[in-house]
Image 1 (cartoon, rainbow, N blue to C red):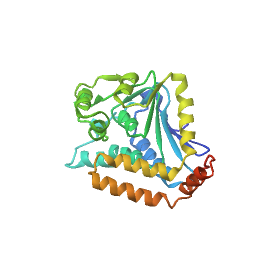
Image 2: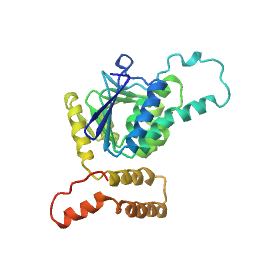
Image 3: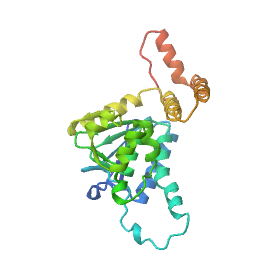
Image 4: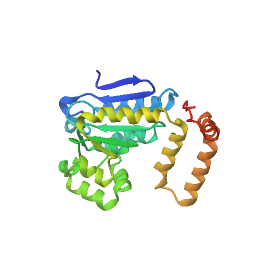
Length: 261
């Protein structure tokens, strides 16, 4: 398997970070490949769900910082540009992916790795998983959209607590805070992620994409804007074959068969 495994199983794409010796810390090449694959998943009508996970003891230990301090003299704007084209682009690729993305967190998710999980639509975590806002330990400001994502998920006070102290959060604590949908026995993680992904892949794909867009935008919108977006999404969705099939199934008292169209 390459450093980012890419397995197609039916209508589900499984993306696996595969550098277990460094807890799947992300290199720039890995990060860019993930962005590319998520973009391809959005555009491919045969892809109807994505699962993101890691190998070994780590989901993702964040960005691979080895050698970063010796990269030569910095020019004003370099750091912001690197962040914009790197970590922020990765998180945006997850948030903007038009297919549901499930994080199957198999171990440590730290820094950018934690934010990568939090950006996913659904988060499953093994009992052994832990989440760490590690930036403060290194004297750094959180990046990868953390200060955007966390307050929206758990509120500003909880977000500040995690980011100010950098303490490890167990899977159960993350579930209690609402950062995780389900905590599972380690051996059940892959099975449950597959079941959830297959269930999503059998759903009305465009309706799910529009629902994702509405929910993601909701906390940044006033009521009038949110209602207008909802009405527009309904207008678009009612032109899809799946919406027509869903209504027909209801009228005919049968289970609808969605094709993702």
